[in-house]
Image 1 (cartoon, one colour):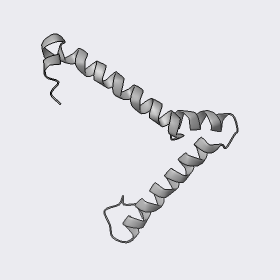
Image 2: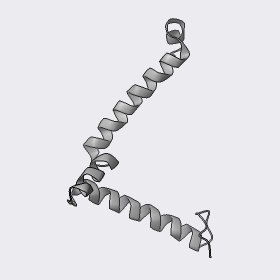
Image 3: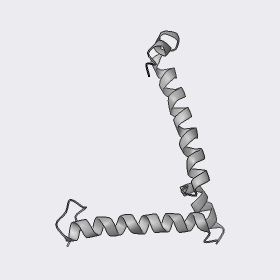
Length: 83
């Protein structure tokens, strides 16, 4: 898809800002709808609730943490822990 014609009408900084805004809105709506939203999980946690949004974040964090630790323990390219 060729969008170079937009550069003839709008300067590059404005076009980048508009594309950034549209991308942010799309990802924000998708995150909110899929329960994979850090803001919503933080609000749940602050209210003392451990609902589905917090559960999704805890499962995701645990999976990433164990994956990184597993790779580093078995000689992979995971992060190196001091000690």
